[in-house]
Amino acid sequence: MSPKIAIIGAGTAGISCARTLLEYGFEVTLFEARERIGGRIHLSNVFGKPVDLGPNWMHGNTLQNSALMYFKDASVALHDIGSSGTIFSPSGTQYPPEKVNYIEEFMWEYVEEAIQYSKAHAATIDPDLSLYTYVEKVVTDRYPDNAEIREQILMATRIFGFYIGEDVTKQSLKFAYLEEPPPGENLFVASGFASILQSMASKVLDKVDLQLNTPVAAVHTFDSGVNITLTAGQSIAYDAVVVAAPLGALKKRTIAFRPELPSRLLSAIDSLGYGRLEKVYIKFPRQFWNLDYFEFFSPEYAPDSNPEKWPMSVISLAHLPEPYSQPVLLWYLYGDMSQKVVNMQSDREKIAFFEPYFSRISGYELGCDDPEAILCTSWSKDSYAGYGSYSCFPTGLKEGDKDIEAIRRGLPERKVWFAGEHCSDMLQLATVGGAYGSGTHAAKLVVEQFACKN
Figure 1: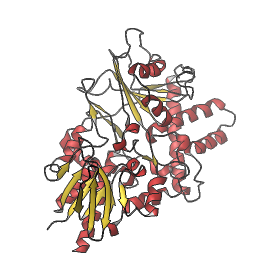
Figure 2 (figure 1 turned 60 degrees about the vertical axis):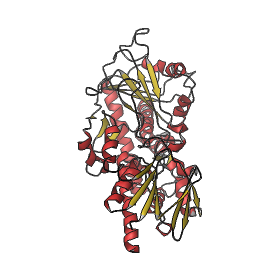
Figure 3 (figure 1 turned 120 degrees about the vertical axis):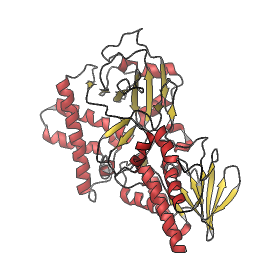
Figure 4 (figure 1 turned 180 degrees about the horizontal axis):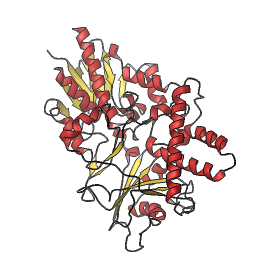
């Protein structure tokens, strides 16, 4: 008789795990709390054309990205956002094009330098030091007499927060190397991730016992196997379980484990960070802009709505290839800024928050280009998403690499394994490809366990 395996979570990691287990002849039940598969891969057609509420990007287009093998079947349109953009200064004026290129080149140079420093000295770096602190020290040493350049580079460095999902002042320098982008280009998935998800799930969903709208309350492990207890009260026996729930759900103890998870594993789950990246799509009557992206540095011109002077990062969907082009600006928000917008009560209030920024873009005409619609994500309010977006590595973290390995190793002695972007290999953390690869990895650990048992 084939071993019966339960997988908790039908996102990318869970689907990947199920696919591999099926290939080895296992009997698989896939539990999903939502009414749909995909987890944080989710599209909206509220504007008439699809926009991704979850991931937008393919980070690294090399064979190291496990998800790429399905892109050809999915007929995915990838788009290079391009280099045509501008930066607004704190006063609201645009920097000259030559200065924009200069600032961005220097910003990525210093972030990369911090990552390389982290790689070389992680063992001795103070856990409380941030990536921002490192860049601040370096530019102060190199430009002691040029406050303007120091300020511009540091403002640009804060834009890295849109990549990690939190403020760079909270990003660990010690483990900054874990945020190193995978090799290859960063491309925008213009057609959306839905077709990728469908391609991943093909030949899986019709072979597993898929249980939608079925939250799992507890995992009980015994010498003879595992019992899965549903929130509805039913308890079902399996030979093993793979928990492919988000890191945030594990941190919130959404699923109870009996016996409790070992202290080392709990410490790993609690120590890793969980980012709060949100997205806001604003649709306009027409495309009044001609650039690919816009960045707003430490704005001083919105003291009432943005006294913290949070920066803004915006990309244009009007420059996507047809049929995906639309007069929409996509805003990325992170950390406390994202929480402020998510907690606003009305679309009118949200649009008013962004008005000081889009109204400064060249071509905007008041009364003619007023927004038609706004769509905001709210992953940080979503219990099934773990109240956040994806893993990150905060200051104070002492054993980030070992924490990831502890989760990735699982509990073979209790027939419990984990999968998700938070326990992928080091080059794909916090990515769709990483989630997919982690599911395959967990499945192979299950296969090895039962091969040894037999």
